Length: 315
Image (cartoon, rainbow, N blue to C red; front, side, top):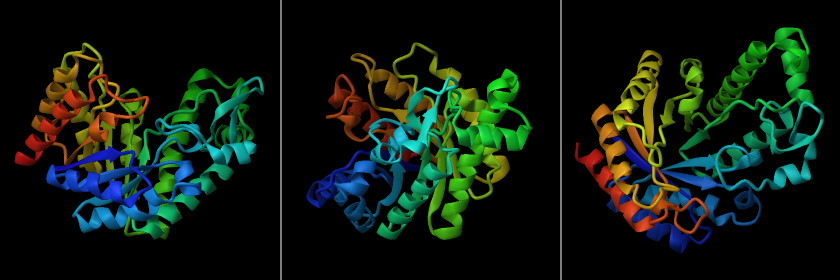
């Protein structure tokens, strides 16, 4: 089983090397470097230095565009949207929404440019992080696509048609990005995490030919659900991946863990190890300490996550 961790990183190579050396000592295989829009503009050290340091230490560097377009995870502060307001989502009543729209060709073009940059820097994979339906967007691009696909007005459509459209847009985006990676940077592994709340899209995501690796993130550490209820979800994702020949990965939560909930990290980790996905990843390195998504007790949370990662490698 491959193991890995998401990593907020640093622009200073000295700090990158210290952290990545600890990752390798933990037996990790993959490091998901969370590059943000500011890293492409102002703090380029994270992008430039991470791949070389990671590979020298035997880690595989994978790029995530954390918070890009004010979508895709945390850290949402899009300089691109500030400079390109035509990329913002638009509400049904025409009001401005703070996130970008991945149906908009302007936004897609910027993501492709960023992929070119990380590919040139030496990243070995690109990760599409939690694409989900943009149910509130009625921008010109969404309206035009709905018209092309359904021959109707998005704003006047039946709810079931709108929902089908939104889900198709998620899959279309993931396919567009994976196709681009494979056509322009064939050496890069393409991977995607589709959340449990979007389980209805798992099968369609698994059928994207250019996508190599698919998984989900059952982040239940702060919930009281029986961890055994994870098993059918993991099995469903495994089945999708098996039928389509995809690598199957699963994520374990180690961010925003509430005080006293750290044992849930171990409990969920035990289930994941037992179910044997191809890869088990933890979000995030050192319990995301120093961010607004840090665990309440980072030392205890990371201790639990590290224990799971060691057990996963021990078999």
